[in-house]
Image (cartoon, rainbow, N blue to C red; front, side, top):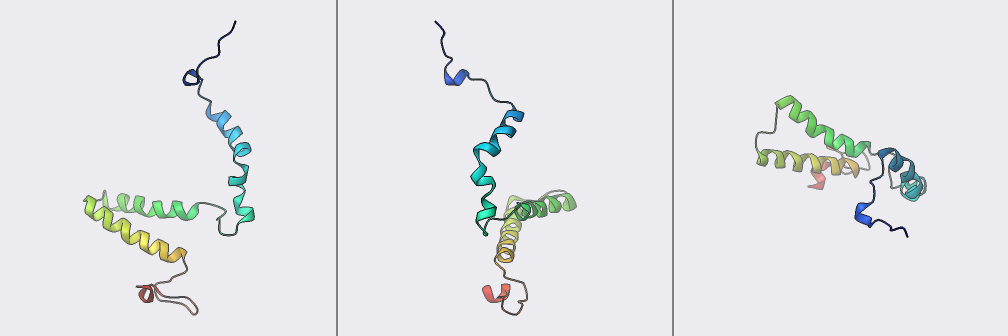
Length: 102
C-alpha cells in the first residue's frame, strides 16, 4: 500500500519546468495583444516609468526623504499618465495640453 504525500510536502517545480509550462497554461494571456488593440505588445512603458526613478537615484545618490520621493513619484505618475492618454505639455492640433487638462 502506497501513501500519497500531502500537498504541503510536494516538491517545488524547477524554474525550467515553470518556463516550459507557463506559455501552455497562460496562452490566452500571453497572446491577448493579438486580439485586443488596447493591450500593448511589450511592457516597455511600465519599465520606462520605473527607469526614471532609478536614474534619479543614480544621479542624486538617493532620495533624500520619503516626502520628497512621494512628491517625485506623484509628479512623474501624473506626467506619465497624461502622456499615455495623449495629453501633451503644450498641446498639438487635435490634442489637449497638460495645462488645459488641469
